[in-house]
Image 1 (spheres, rainbow, N blue to C red):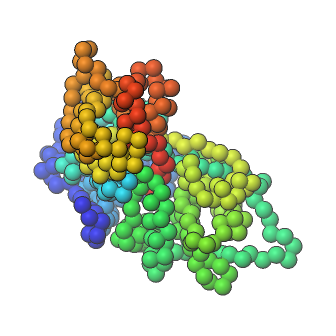
Image 2 (cartoon, rainbow, N blue to C red):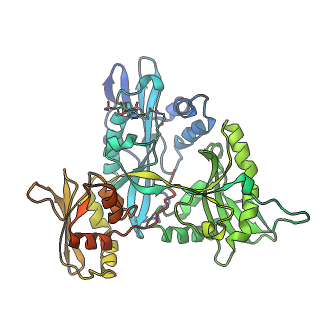
Image 3 (cartoon, rainbow, N blue to C red):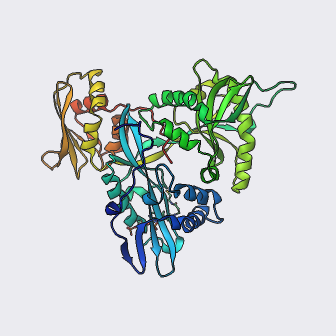
Length: 453
Ligand SMILES: CC(C)(COP(=O)(O)OP(=O)(O)OC[C@H]1O[C@@H](n2cnc3c(N)ncnc32)[C@H](O)[C@@H]1OP(=O)(O)O)[C@@H](O)C(=O)NCCC(=O)NCCS
């Protein structure tokens, strides 16, 4: 797999989607077409606006449905139409993307824009679309599906919370330092341009390198994020270059207009090597505060501060614990790995490298991992992964370790340690040898994924 291609656009072919499906009662599940753009925007705006219409969500839908969209477009969007009422009543799209695990590329399908008209809910319309989306994702060769979704719901579709999502530190507005009498800003912000890509991509790559799972951003993706066509402009908050007052770029920031709970979310912040983050933060907070207040007023929400949503660790937290005073725990990415042994084989070089550095270097033997209803058998020879395959646990052979169904993903993706899972789930267990091996293979590790879409 290569990131070098101009885009990663993978499109559902008609053969993959299949013919429109009759769901009964006049409801038809089909692939979207360009003509669906405005009805879809209206559906999504109504559903996500809840009491009021969300222009932001509608603009997002119009952008995704552009035929020129580099990763989505109508062909990667499903809709359910009530053919009797002649209206769209439910939708899901799939955003293909490439992530890395300890630097190893793997392909991911990200279901997004999941919405059903309130009058058509709890009839299985999303369930039906997820079956199609999963088949499409498999046909595109995705090893993993990942979704940032509402609590619990996606567990029904074989997803498990397996990566941190968001979380970070809040700077309350009351804590934002004012400029002193006669003091001037030493730094300022300006909109990022295409010419900045070499500078910012180096900073982004450096941050990806400290994240076990990351979403690399090749040049075409930066270009897409900086696209100033009217459709993306209607919902995106422009990326900003942080520069010294004499025009020297020292970093970049990705603000958003999202108010999460009671704080304006900032998605990314990276500074050049040798640049003090502490020196920049007061100016940045002063710049963000009025924008947070304006975004909250527009969305009819209250806002009390700015959330630097970079996950559990970030140099900014160490630079200014006094300003970024409040911890906000992360939510979770839902992940689905339909073929766990295949994923393990894919990341074998990372596992072998960990093993080589561990107290069980050169390990030879089996590791049988039970998820009770199914299991996986890994065989190592002299520290190398020989095989990884499915294996059926039985009452007589429960394997070397046990995980409640789905929860093995949490150690696989480094979100929790084996010890943490054992403390939490009475039915998570490991024999002594297996516990040492699992700790060596799957250490807990920081991840912060900035996805496509
Ligand atoms: C969440 C939402 C998309 C569900 O759509 P839907 O078409 O009603 O979903 P389905 O009927 O296919 O749901 C599948 C199953 O989950 C159940 N279900 C539906 N909504 C649920 C909810 N909010 N919580 C728990 N279960 C739910 C359904 O009853 C169904 O169960 P069954 O198959 O055992 O009968 C819809 O309520 C919605 O648009 N909500 C507002 C927007 C939103 O939050 N979108 C998700 C963003 S990640």
